[in-house]
Amino acid sequence: MLNNEPLPKKSMGQHWLSDSDALEAMCNAANIHPGELVFEIGPGTGELTAKLLEHKAKVIALEYDDQLLQVLHERFKSINAEQLTLLEGDVRTYDFTNIPVSNYKIVANIPYYLTANLMRRLTDNIINKPTTAVLLVQKEVAERVAAVPGDMSIIAVAAQFYYSVTLGRVVKAELFTPPPKVDSQILIMNYDPNPLYSNIDAKLFFRIVKAGFSQRRKTLLNTLSGGLQIPRIEVETILEEVKIETQTRAQSLSLNDWFNLYEAIALKLSK
Image (tube, rainbow, N blue to C red; front, side, top):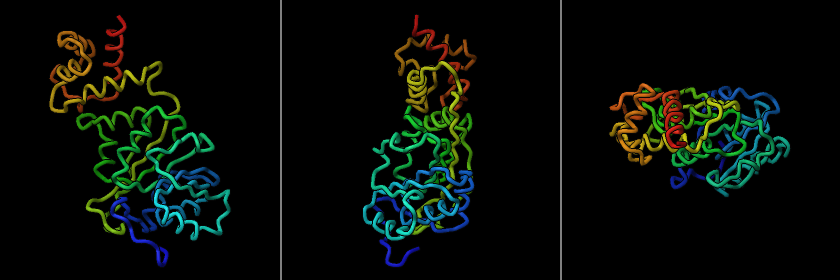
């Protein structure tokens, strides 16, 4: 940590991590090779940035806090501009097509309040998705994204539709400054450029998923009927066709179940 650095701002959800082992675990999870481009979100005081540079990555670091950006410029003033680019900006509005290559990775310690927005952006049909995203997020969020049938959510379906999702090291709260109220965990998402399901209308697929999850305590018979404006009797027939019990709830379905539902509903809507 640097002397005279600004204090973390609670309003920006700043919890800085300087533990070398945890930072190394993030870099290892990203499997960084020399010369690869890494997009870092919220570099803070630059601890992870320095570790990425040790791994010989080319880093573009996006920082929202202009005061921290000054700290970063001073800390890394000796680093070649080809190796490190520091940008001021907000990831919630950042245009990922500005990243100069398509084969890049994201490695970041994410403020908790940004996590949901970033996950939506990474799972929307944005152009130029990262090949790998390694995010240090709230442990509960990491577990939700990597969930299995029985505990699924929209965010899990969306992430696993586009990415192979695994969990890495748990990072204890006391390793942060200041310590957050809960532990964090490394979330690893590897993008597959070949679609999991071919010839799929992603907009319709996620319309069906959102309808299914629209009322978590209700059964798919109710949520799909209400959310898609399809008579219950027809939804019942569709569920029987794809071998899903009518009393099943959305969190119990696998991605294959959702795809089978999508195909049956798409066929129904096309008639």
